[in-house]
Image 1: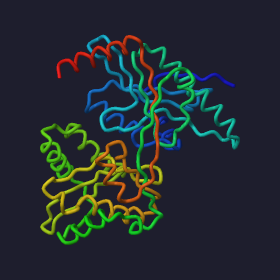
Image 2: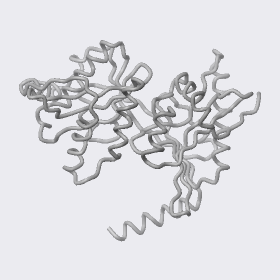
Image 3: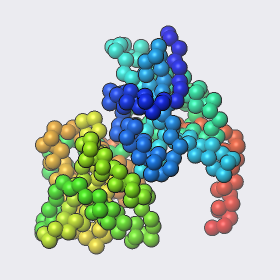
Image 4: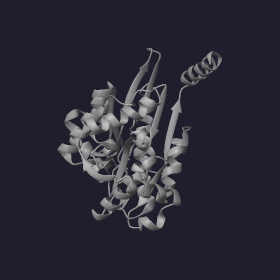
Length: 335
């Protein structure tokens, strides 16, 4: 078997990377150079896209965000703020044999793992996209692993037969309030609703306004998603979902709600009408990324979703582990 070469991709090679993202089954919008560029520029992150080559052909790779903590610790992560997963990708092999496909995957991931270990990182944290399940090339070499979850709402099913009593009550409330839904593309509307959510908690939004503006621009230019809003009879937007397109699915990436209208059922109405909207466009499922937060899980379970696992792998140096322990001890003492 030919040896795998791993190196940082040049910006001129990002188009080739995007083709790999498009063809690899676990590839998502979060892997694309467009999305990664938004994270890099708006959040001021140091971004590297490492490619794995066999005989000059790009056969895999992984984006990495690098952060230096006080000049003492060098941290690597495949994700950043509100990018739930974005780990390694592997080009799908032509072989029909499972053993051959597994061998190719392990060789590519093994080369990537060894390369990352030589970059002087004190911590490496990779979050693999749903559908990328084989983390053994990492765990067999001492990396820690953990499982996270997302929800899939299957669009081939009858939505009405899967609704809980609570969701039915919320839909009735929305109907009585005269709420309607529509597709919109107004970043100001979304940011206003998101700000209301965090103001109620005395918190700042998790991302700068510019981030959402860049996402809306990407949606407009490359048709990679849409915003669904719920509004009153007077035309006031009271809830919104910002959705991104995946392979055969739509990803509910971020949602916002005016707390004053929460009892009217606008969020339930959004999901219900989105379900019908996407079903009419022949999407197979909605990927609702709300399975790791209990209060969000309680709500979305009213639509009878399928629970889907995805995985993380982490390697920490002794220096990082010690610093982390000291940080936890000192903060416990000051609380």
